Image 1 (cartoon, rainbow, N blue to C red):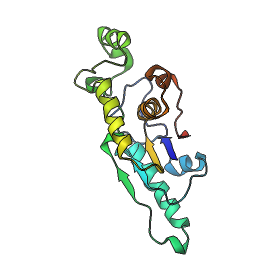
Image 2: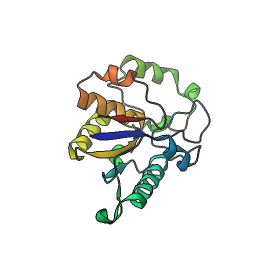
Image 3: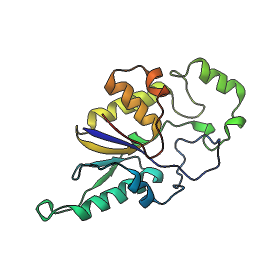
Image 4: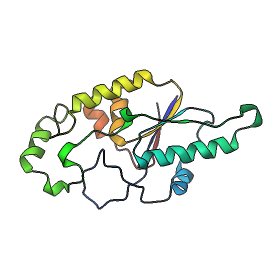
Length: 178
């Protein structure tokens, strides 16, 4: 079973487009850990390298390593994978949504699953990146990442349409099992 965890709320003003921006968390990681469900110990932990995910992954690994029994000596390693980063919004990164050119937003709305973000990633390339990553992960793991990545993984592994997957609400610090 894979446990997919979305990072907690990042520290940034409201209504800002972000994907690859490396933002700190708005609340302490320890507080986020307390909100997560009981997770199995000893599973490998994979994370996006962005600090809003990586810090949570490292804290979770440290907490789990402290509780391992003597028979399971050692510590839990965290593996950062660039393939677990959110979609790259290109020149929209860090821009208020109201300041993104209207014609670009309209083009995205007209083809949401085929769009190429200006100076960023196309949605098909993003989905392919996630497909390749899924094929490389073990069947049992904890993955700390972003909402778009989780939605793409849902689409690819649960045989639901992209529209259904991207309509799904995924809250900050939410854990899904699939």
